[in-house]
Image (cartoon, rainbow, N blue to C red; front, side):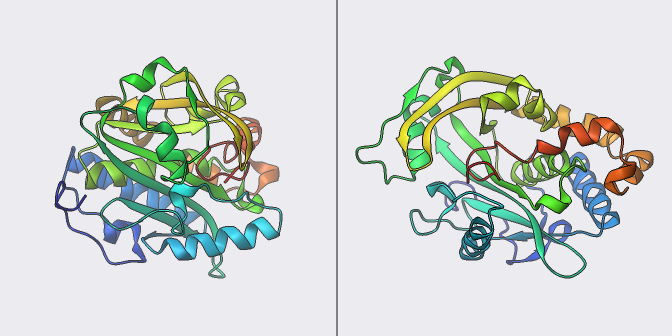
Length: 284
């Protein structure tokens, strides 16, 4: 991937704003959004860091699985199954004031100039370890998703930090970072159908949902996931809209409130860190 998309690779475990170098997309928008998003996180007592050490993500996942707070990572974010490098992936950690990691978000870049998600879904999900595994794609949009594709996942928030709409911010921060690093044409995620029905995936900024992709008898059960997606221009528009509304001073103050004082809408969306496949509290 580094030969196809040369870019400045940041050091591991830098502060998210320090790791950002905008090589693609509208630099003023993306850089300002990351700065304001990081500021909002810091006002909630969280420090966001950009990382490439997927072994640490796997260790964190295994520990939280043992505590019942997460589900096993799917293969595409597990370094035991695939080659994860700064050229094709990243993950974001959020640390509280005690230095504990309380949230994560990760992303992969895929280069499909002559194919599409419809043909690549099985290999992507199982990271090539798909012998004997089944996959059925009925999502019409999957045939259009090709070229440079960003897939978001490993979206996890520790239970005591849920209910603050952190997932809305985190999803967009990961998307903004990826679109600054790589010439992303499509941004996608695979989400549980119930989250589409409840509007949760829309809260992450995805404007479209295409039903469905099925992984029967997978190690995580019989899965049906919905393809949530954005085009490049739609992703920029969503970031600009979120920056102008949700990252206002009043909203940032609301995000920092204790649960008992947060608006009802925020409490209702407290499940929004669940159900994003490729790394959520409900699957991986």
